[in-house]
Image (cartoon, rainbow, N blue to C red; front, side, top):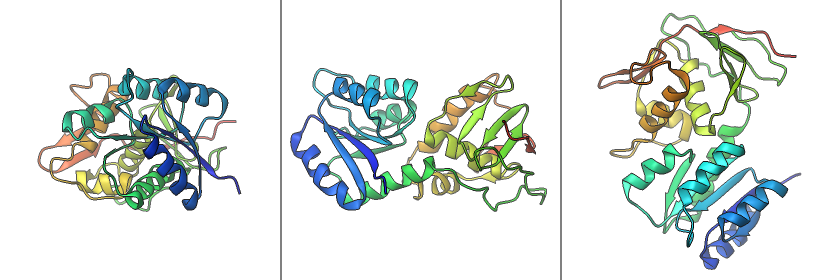
Length: 255
């Protein structure tokens, strides 16, 4: 059985060694790194499924490293940092992090968060939820073994976890963004609360003032909407949550 590869990037040797000892006991292969440059070299030679990235690397911008990961590689990204400021958390999510953990952290909780991110990256079948009309979204098996959903010319491949725009070009999404879009599309026509969406995509309840869903909705709108300030695909419902407006159709699998 091939172990999932996790890169642990932190300037504190005690942290990398601790995780280097702990994570293999939970089914992961780890590489311990101490700089963004070393991470980029690893990404080119032995890319991991997930990166645990410390924001406070000496002389380096952790947010810039996160952006570079998102621009060039598909992997899970969990930011680990001593910065507990809510602004840093929001910026981390905006640059594409799938989760954000502050130090000191509980090892068992960290493993649970890692597994949750990796699960969201795996192909999965359609949810059993139905739109408000009572009609389940039509679906068709794709070449990747998943399902294709369409809306306004866009194609969402749930098996390959891929989104194509109406011109057929792939739109890069983080694992969190894809999971959120899939949850919205699979419940098209229904108003979904932030708590429901967080539970569906992160496996946890919202904490007070948690802006995770709002930040990811904002990122999705920038990628989907003609005018992100006047959204027509994902609309806000004041005091209730969000609704995916377009009707969902099916598409033939690509060959």
